[in-house]
Structure formats: C-alpha cells, structure tokens
Image (cartoon, rainbow, N blue to C red; front, side):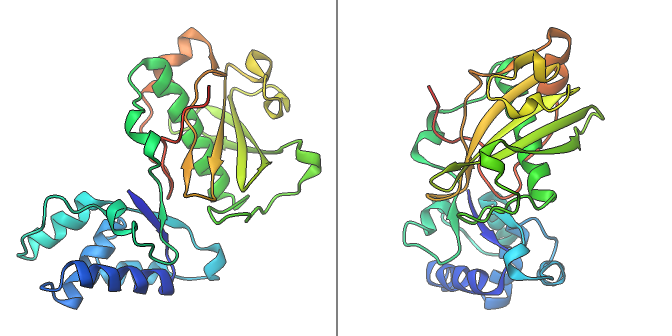
Length: 248
C-alpha cells in the first residue's frame, strides 16, 4: 500500500495520476473510489474529515482492494495488476510508499512475532494520536532531551495499560519503545526488558524513504501468560507500513 496525508494538494495530484491510469472512469466516480480506498464511505465524508491545519492532518493508507471494490460496484472493469504502490513509481507529490522491497520477505507467523508487531503498532498509533510526531520527515513534536526518549501512556485494545517512549534516531527515523503493565520510565532504555514491564519491545519508524515500521522482535521480552493476549490484538497501522527491513 501507499499512504497520503488528507490534504487537498496531494489528493488532487493522486487523482490526476489515477485519471491517467483510468481514463474511462468518470471523475466523480474516481473521487468516490479514492475516498473509499482511504477508509471513508463517501467522498463527502472524506471532505468533512479534512479540517484543521494541513501540517497536522494524518496520513491514511491507500487500500487497493477497497479502491477496486468501489470501482466494480460503480460498474467498471479494473486491471487486476493495478496497485497503489505501482502508481507512485512515478512519484505523486505528497504520496509515500509504505512497502519497502524487504516487506515481501517479512511475515508475522509465530505468536511471538504477532505479539511484538501488535504491541509496537499500538505504540506508534498512540504516539501519532497524541501528536508527538507526524509521518512527515523530521516533523517531531516532542522535546529532544538529549534523545532520552519522550514518555507517553496509552491503553491497549484489550484494556491493559501501556507506556511508550519515542526519540529521534537521526536520518528522519524515530526510535519507539513500548511496555505493557509498565514499571516507571525504564521503557526509555533500549534494553529495558522486564525492568520496563511485563512485555517490552522496540522498533524504528522510517520517514525519509517512505513511512514504515522496521521489523525486529530480537529485543522483545514478554511474560508467557501475556503472549497470547498480545498476539490476539486486532490493530492496523495509521498511515504507515508494518513490514520494514529486518534489523539483525
């Protein structure tokens, strides 16, 4: 998938690119399908959500399946090879990739991998919701504090308390840590482990070459009784990918 901020200019540029790709589709129908791909029921609903300063507006994932589904509902045939990631091979201003080449080699198969992925997606989502940063390169909204990490609290979908830490990792990357049933501010430490909470994991968020979370469960610690609960969470990234390059 690709992602776009909910702003007029990138959406207009994206629609222009789609009109070149689908010259037979009515303009109004392209608008409806585009809105549907971004998670909205209608174009009007998307327009209503586009409020506030543009630099604060969130990114939304362009879901190819939803786009194709809506066009088919409107009576059009769609090339089965179409994919939003392919449309940005010719860059569309403001639209970013969420799928690096390495993403196709990454799968979350084991309970441990799923638990790590869900915890860190929840943490990154919470930091975005709390406006600690955006997915734009360099757009940090938290105090640097010598890269010690800005601590924030959130609640997992299953009701468990969690604490996160975000710091600037350089090169427009962010270092994000998360702990469940947290203990103090040990979540700041890269090797926090069980001193940070009953589950602890780390990741990096790429914002220069695209927007995605780097995949690595090598620094993941989790109490046995908590592992299945974390693996069972249902959570999706808010405008970024969850399969970046593997950190060895």
